[in-house]
Image (tube, rainbow, N blue to C red; front, side, top):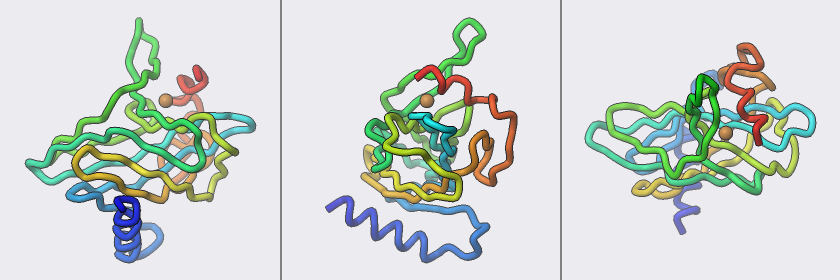
Length: 170
Ligand SMILES: [Cu+2]
């Protein structure tokens, strides 16, 4: 099973980790998923963004097709676009990966949108998320939850509104 294989790869990736401060890395075929994190939800919020970086060696092309997580009933891939000067989120079909140039999912840009959450995401918690790539297949990663309003995985608070306001649209 793909899923089992992915779990083994996660275990190997985890075993390679040193100090806790080292960014988490997960292998999916030739791809590396780096430093995933999700944002904690304020009371009652039913959506949360998840962010990460995808690295591929030169010459490797792939696509992130979808994601899923046991904590959310619906998971979509989103981007932000400027419409008449207003940043809005929109759903996208896939996220292309072109080798040698990493793809960064971050607040205000590309992100994984966890929707219809089954419960709040709490800072300090780790959630599981499975990424589905066109060629590399599936990889299940552990995603640490950073505080509400965090702008980066370290929990640095960067203007709670920045890049987050659009999510209220859901
Ligand atoms: Cu979104």
